[in-house]
Image (cartoon, rainbow, N blue to C red; front, side, top):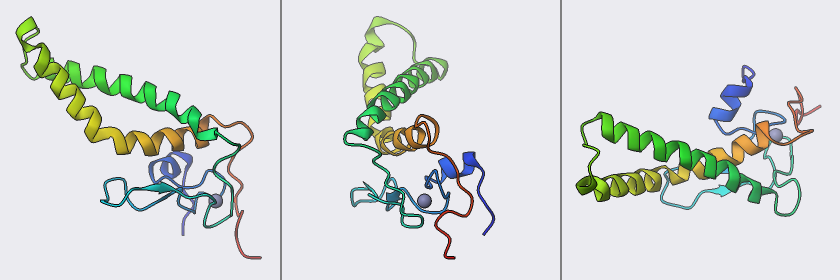
Length: 132
Ligand SMILES: [Zn+2]
């Protein structure tokens, strides 16, 4: 298996240390709830670095939500929804619907971004977890 670049590892939600093990069980839009693995199934890295580690992912998720809200609002305007007071609830409804649809993506990628880019001392170690 070819080694993944950091960007590919982020997109595929792979472990930041070995880039082979999955961070989550299941797919983002599966009917079963997706869960974060406790340890990397490949190199055994503990994903929750310290108690409450994933609370920080809320801040990442917040930033992602703001970006999505702005994008959906501007896209609605560009696609023809006039910016008048009578359309206020259409904007609110579209934004809430869009944010609801994207919430599984936010859950996943806020944690992946936190693990890959915002955690000091956690980097790619080629060959970690390989059987000797
Ligand atoms: Zn790993």
